[in-house]
Length: 301
Ligand SMILES: NC(=O)c1ccc[n+]([C@@H]2O[C@H](COP(=O)([O-])OP(=O)(O)OC[C@H]3O[C@@H](n4cnc5c(N)ncnc54)[C@H](O)[C@@H]3O)[C@@H](O)[C@H]2O)c1
Ligand SMILES: O=C(O)C(=O)C[C@]1(C(=O)O)C=C[C@@H](O)C=C1
Image 1 (cartoon, rainbow, N blue to C red):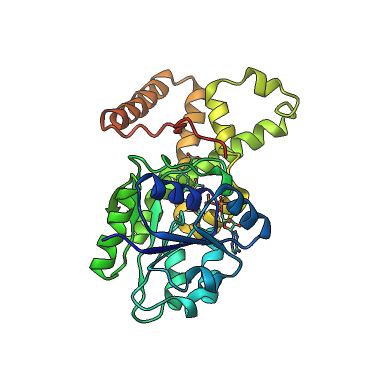
Image 2 (cartoon, protein in one colour; image 1 turned 30 degrees about the horizontal axis):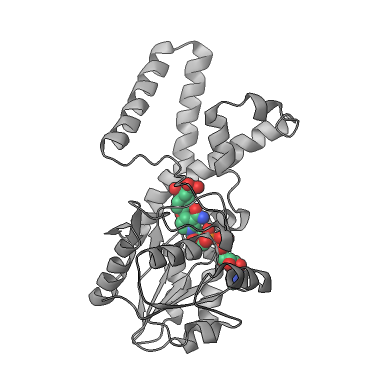
């Protein structure tokens, strides 16, 4: 059974992609949206994002069967506290945050009895943000992880069906496990990309175009990732602190080992290491999980 009324709180990349994916799927739900800034609401109205863009939180969520929090992770608790009294009994609240334990801790205390809370995270995104950044194909064939944490099974099944209609594949996961896995596959790699671009910038050549002009695809990929939204990523690192630090500790150990191999001329070690990592990439491709940045012929709105 699909939802009759859906509300998006926060109208950026993920909310707008969800909205266009709903329209593509032919979902008949009435969609309301709320964004904190007047400018974002004006843009949303201009591009036809949502059936109704509301100027206050209460009007956006009052009638909704599904409320989707599409905000930076650090803002979820505060916004949920404000909208909690306006959510109707029987509704489901979900989120799309990149970290799950911190969102559960911030949001769950505000969930009234009779309201279902099913946290979620679509593993799909780009370095772009804001209401114009969304596109209907973003979630196609990508995972959406739900971390129900004991939520009502019918509410979980309904949300799972909804994400599948948006094009995603759905799996359930324990929130702490989610945070550790994502620290490896997304959070630490982003920090490494930010660092690498920072290092290049420190050499004062990036902005003078030399590094840009002569950069190979590896560095260009880093610059794409390092162009991601600063607020979103600040919140990811501050709220997934333990798992990220654990993975960065391991990363540093490996980096030192490779550094030593280079210094001592240990070609065998380097070759063995790169052979092992190449096999991992090939395994991902063989499993049909090539995670290269999607383009999908994104439409400009
Ligand atoms: N961008 C990605 O690649 C990606 C992928 C998957 C999940 N996510 C997660 O999805 C969530 C939204 O990300 P996005 O990429 O859509 O971001 P975005 O920057 O495109 O949109 C965020 C929206 O939240 C609003 N907002 C920000 N702070 C607020 C506050 N304090 N109160 C009220 N509204 C506020 C902004 O005005 C904007 O409308 C984040 O939690 C992020 O971790 C992002
Ligand atoms: O492709 C990108 O731009 C992304 O970084 C998307 C990405 C990722 O790391 O894969 C980023 C954060 C989200 O939580 C999920 C997806």
